[in-house]
Amino acid sequence: MEKIVSLCKRRGFIFPGSEIYGGMANSWDYGPLGVELKNNIKQAWWKKFVQERGDMVGLDATLVMNPKVWEASGHLKNFTDPLVECKKCHNRFRADHIEGKTCPDCGGELTTAKQFNLMFKTFIGPAEESANVAYFRPETAQAMFVDFRQVLETSRKRIPFGIAQIGKAFRNEITPGNFIFRTREFEQMEIEYFIKENDWEKSFEYWLGEMYDWMNFLGLKKDHLHDLEVPEKERAHYSKRTIDIEYDFLFGKDELYGLAYRTNFDLKNHSTSSGVDLVYTDPESGEKYIPHVIEPTFGVDRSVLAVLTEAYCEEEAPTTKEGETEIRVVLKIPKHIAPIKVAILPLSKKEELSNVAKEIYKEVSRNFFAEYDETQSIGKRYRRQDEIGTPYCVTIDFDSLEDKKVTVRDRDTMEQERIEISELINYLKNKF
Ligand code: GAP
Image (cartoon, rainbow, N blue to C red; front, side, top):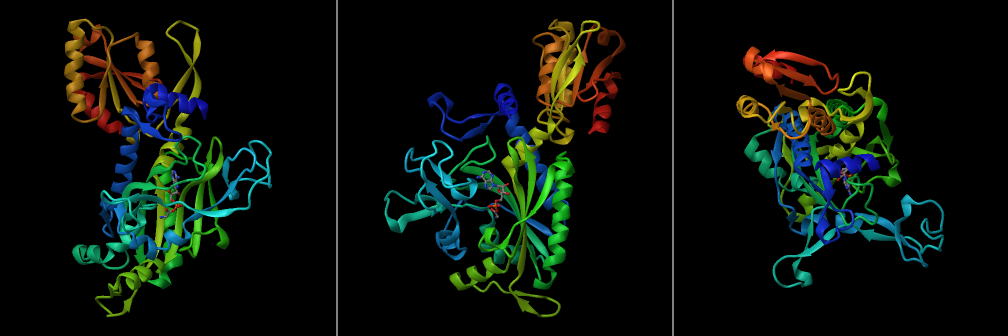
């Protein structure tokens, strides 16, 4: 884990937030490569679950919603974790995350557990009065219920159909930690899939399969994934069945994603609280009912962490010196989500080479996110591209001026191929 955190910092994937002010505990910023990786994951998810399907539509709602939403959804009352405090060192812990009755830090006695609400409170407008209290959303899900009627009317979808959203969520976690695994501000990609009650079991199984398809696309090995059937007393207040999909993170097995059957709990409560009828009328049979919901939910940051964990490799590789080997660090990120797809590396900074290389760079970047790098030895440049997971390096050497060919190096096999410059774009397109 330390190696991954250090690589992320060194290469500009993820670094501590507000660092020049001494940082802020458990806040992490995505740097130039991290934001590419994260965006690629989000875009691929959107393409797979929204754009490639006829039964899904997207939404992008506000982070701060009318506080009545959280009353109706049950979050103000039920969105809590059990908190214990050490009577000696006053450190605080989640009671369900520790074993025994003594402090894991100093061995002191712990208080009895009390329920702590995780909602992030704020005030709207200039006066900090109770009338102005509002909350940052703790899940993106609620907007999909609150806007259900508008989406239904404008998109003219019929049940079964789903609404998807990607965005930030906020939780005042008692014990954030493990890098970007548990933070107070994070991103979710969520689907609320609206169905008829009788179809819930079939739909639940179907979505579990879709989630595994997605994890396979991210390169996560099936052996590293585990379904946890969440027992009733540990399920969220709205859920009748939940499976947590756990991943073998380097700090232990823990929740990556979740799949829940939310019944019609949310639409029913919003209908009652708002006084707006959220009943669906089947256009063919005329049957009226409040739809039930299957919710596959995906943490974006946990996706990034799982992808990095799975991709990180150290392997023995030959150096440029005959017979010598070294340990190379390589991020074998699936090609389609790698931050940079192609690196253009002229062997020398001499103008005759860099002119050709820059032309190639211009052409390649019209098709792929590419990087141009002419500093340092070629060995060091390969090492950097391996460490940031760039699938292909294109080297331009003095022979290129004569034979109009470049060398393409494959990140995973380290094999090199000579390719006609005029064929390069097609060659790369076939690789992705
Ligand atoms: N709408 C349902 C819901 O929010 P959840 O299991 O509480 O369910 C969904 O959260 C996903 O969001 C989790 O599976 C996880 O990937 C991610 N997540 C939850 N809390 C998080 C946190 N504090 N930091 C990072 N990701 C988190």
